Image (tube, rainbow, N blue to C red; front, top):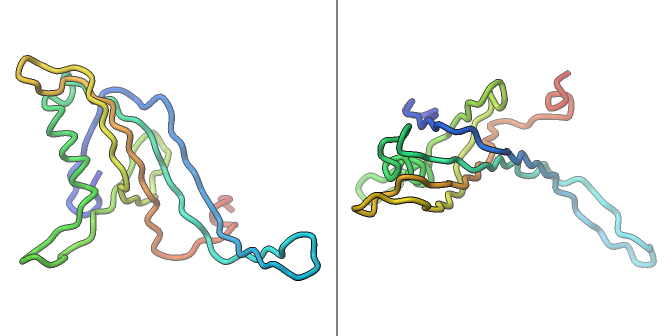
Length: 146
């Protein structure tokens, strides 16, 4: 669901899996004569969520339109040739997972599988990758669910 305009995309089939990946950034400081570098925390890293959506004509009557909607979330809005708004923030609504987390779409990779006589897609697997949109720092206790 688009946080900024309320539009949404629904799909008929549940993804077979989700990959929820998190990172931390550490500086590696070489000290002459030491066997290993010193490691110093520098910042949190990116958190990504990736999965594959199966879009089928029975739910998304126009599979191509659903793919265009997904792709549109990769792009900013422009007015008069100038940046008006960054790409929209999204919510992923799947059970109780990721309920309060905002994301931005960073990748859409479409695999077209079946077509009608006019060449319109009837079935597509769409791999998406999202990057968590963080507005303020969060610490270990918030993540652990204190």
